[in-house]
Image (cartoon, rainbow, N blue to C red; front, side, top):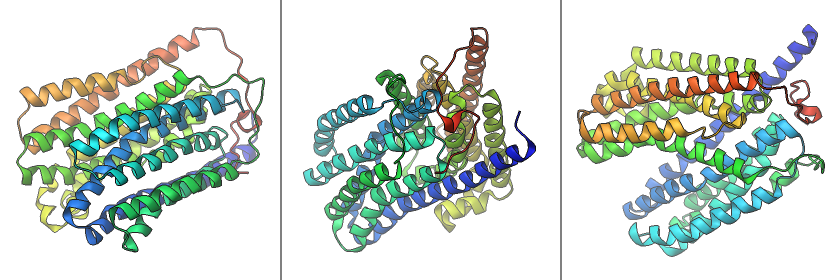
Length: 419
């Protein structure tokens, strides 16, 4: 058992790390928000629509990078400085191959310029590659450096586009700037990760783990966006616009406690049940505060998200905020299942998505309250199902003989490293 001073030191370190990662997340999300705002001021409507479409395609392609980061972080926390080059290369090759097949089709079907699509591909591959070094920093619990890496990647991914738009480079020029800066950032991430050698005795990261983590990340993306797509399909244009504003609250409640997942993941990889309970409590508490705030000031929430014209729709705010808060809990649970090497960790999410789509297409009322209410019910059922599966997997693990894992000094006693 550690002394009180040791525990206070770890708590202080985690608090500092949490603030740093939170600020990095705010910085990255802020830059991501600035891109379409500047695009609306520097591009004509057709180019602005193309930019929004390309950003959406890039977000989907970037899922592989998030999956790679999660897989590397889990493996690093569990096995120390294991080799991750082979699965990283395979991930990049598969990502590049899929982009080479899908982006030309998207260019034709969505009327996108070939140079812009090519540059998006380069930018996306660079973002995916960054997942390796961010994952190593996360798995080593070097959270201050991780925050720096997140900020650097955000500056490369979005800062380049912001600069390109501000300087009048247009759609192609902004994507060119983003692609160049994203590639250059990779060299900085390698330097930021100095001191992380390879232990030749540690087991290598399996490619299957990367695929599992990527699939789980994609499932989270799909299940949290599907209601917006269905609202676009089934509601009148003006009403679907109001729904789109509401989903800003959903995404805010979903991603606001993201820092908890980032910091908890290395501990979850070591089977730290207390870390899971603490993470769930923090995320649930944050969600409860956001839901309460949206219930008390729904009009203000809609005004801040969409402008004065949407303030009258504030009565829907608790629906959207509660959906996001529940999916934040699901996100923690899915990451815990990935960290525990559970089979098909995202299965409840895919099943929920299918059932939700079928319900909206057949029986759910075609109103904001109907579609948002069904999304809330879906999120609640998904959270319960994922929680039960997580508990069942934990009980199964406790019934097995204790496994001995090779850990590096950073994680031997849950110490936070920032060097």
